Length: 408
Image 1 (cartoon, rainbow, N blue to C red):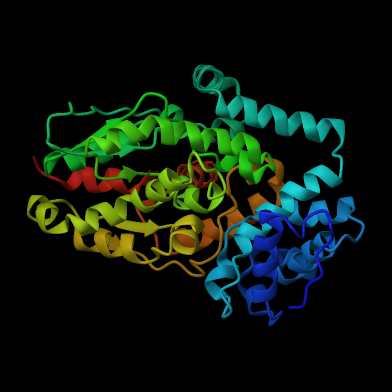
Image 2: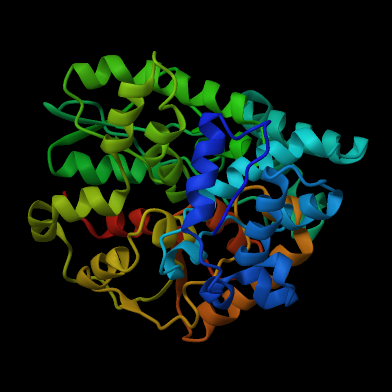
């Protein structure tokens, strides 16, 4: 694609990156077939090809309106289009750049700004979010059913003491430790059984994805730097990896090296963090010879529908690997039609675009429940909460299922 970037961006690092992505696109349109919002709305501008066209216009200095902002807001950033694209267009990174620029060029209404500010501050503050979650659980009988369903039952689980020479770190995150602390605890127990201690490091927190997706890049970079500062001493002392049990956060950590490459104080360390960030399926697959003999063989049969988050299959490119492990431990996986499509969670998308998110969830649950599973498993806290609010079936993180089948 031929480009002629405007003066305000053409000689910047951001502009050069955007231009290289734009030039890779040949406008073939294969991406529209796998775009969830295009499938729902049938509007070219609500598909990757149309959004790329809008961003190209903006980057070339053409007037930008609320229309451009609307179509970028409707994007789930699911990156299904990247999996489909024959030209390797890095659409997810381009839309992050586009959103950051459109935030500066198109003022939002006062109510929209307030809502987004409240989302960021409320979710990113552990104390505020924790207080809200505790209050919500206490008042669950008084809440509207749709809101009450968004609060999963609190399960904690024991976290084994750090006692092994081999150590891995864990991303503490922002939402998951408050809503589902049992997930990281289950991962810690799995690793403890095979001689690896999973360590929580004070000072680490949000991965930065929430701020970045809401157009607050500088805030996102502050979170990234804080995590690097917190983890670095442990990595220098021999910690092997940073385990990320939420696939949405895992995608973000994998991109630290790209996002901080122009920061001389952090570029090298960010690159190493990105290389050491691992999804649980990568860790468990690497240690499978030690895990497999510990699997219980007398468990009752259980039918599982696995929802592969977009961040796992399109972002991390790990599609199919979790399903292989679940099948290997004796769980019966039911078929899921259109498994490549997003469930509608997408970070804060389900809050900011509730109508589209609900339609996507309805479609996804219909596909997941068609095989009559006993429960639904997934790999991302956002998907877990979003799906759980729309079904009476239990929705669990797959690592918890593995933990339950492992013997001491």
